[in-house]
Length: 154
Image (tube, rainbow, N blue to C red; front, side, top):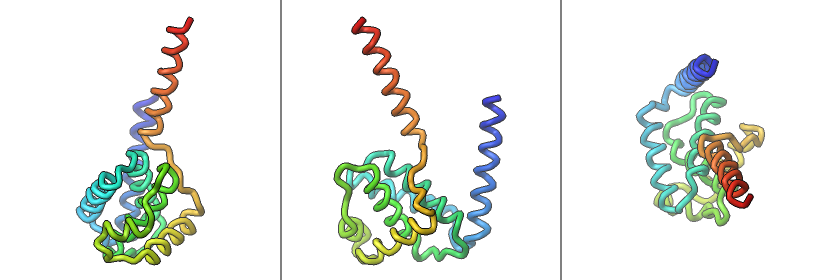
């Protein structure tokens, strides 16, 4: 059953990415791969949690899935917007829009980052938090730690 569930989830993911590609022909997969690599560098620069990065990539893909003919000239701005949103959700001390603008060599202004942030939130109907493998493993390890504490304290 688990294998069948995994297989059907894989098929759904493939359909989703084919849908993104069909609706956004300018966004090529190698561009997306480079963009995610750059998002990893930005996350590292600000010492963001992995959860923030993973949620940002999910936000990016979800937004692209609900958008048609998105220009690849604005992919980096979209990534900054996703990182900005997710850092506000996940981080104790999130970087500011000015910090993210500086990371992109001030190619985008604070206003542009805040505008894309608003557009992302509206397009996704404020559904901004997703379950990622990090979240699942974090919960499982916390439960495991509590079980070990109970065992050793009894």
